Length: 365
Image (tube, rainbow, N blue to C red; front, side, top):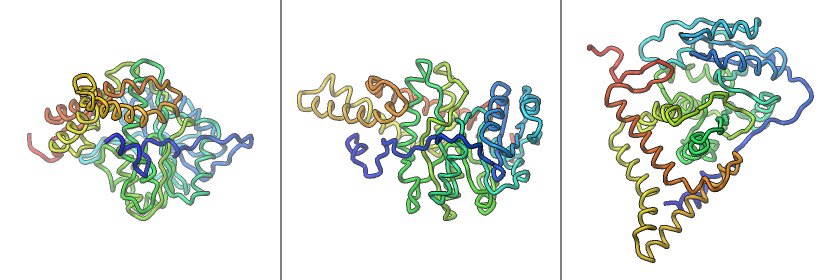
């Protein structure tokens, strides 16, 4: 299994698909771009996000949709920039995911050919939006998404955040996602630059209105419509939202892990068997097996660690973290089971004080 990961022609462990800001002293004219920012309870980050967007260049249009916030998000957004548009979002209608409903409400205010979908906790390095535009133009792309770098300061962030990217790349190999003939489509919702006409052609956000994993769903719709997409890593797009403890990372993963398995108990069982075979059996065999079995187990563990090293090196982390892969895999499996247990108890997903029930919108109590 682990040797297969290493020799797979699409190289899911590779970090070759990456894009960082190019050094440029000229100020970019961004008259053709509108940044659409869905914001729910983002008082801690919205001001910095908007100030950072303004630094990207001249004439950038910014539309913030206050998604029924329970704090001062809207007021702080207006105070940060008097030229932007702040919309007060309407109540969430049945059948819609909150973020997509916020984006849909902001879409009529976008008149530019390019649309930047950016979360309120995302920061772009100087010149990054210019670099993204150039990448789209040079590669004739219609849709470009970059995986924002999450903070990696605390113990749990250092242990689990690089692995989050690693597992995402195993599930959605970037090489396949960027290949026109492949059905794989990936995106990271924190930072997406796309053509507005493409979004209109696929039916807007309404075409994926109930998707909780909205970024990959959007990329899939774009790719199915025959347009070109790109997904890559970057150090020039960062999240300013910290995940200081295990619980915060746990909830981030658990909110959509069972959704990723399509709420299927069969897929959950298969996932569990896969993780046991991949992470537990090599360790158990190394400790308890005979000489021949231990040699195989050691080979598996070495291949496992080798496959993780490129991601660790990309983010400047010590290679010694690869020794923790069995423990990391166990934690992510536990998060997935936690997600399933929440679903079976009636909670499909929960984020920022908004709960999506497993009950159908029109179901009777």
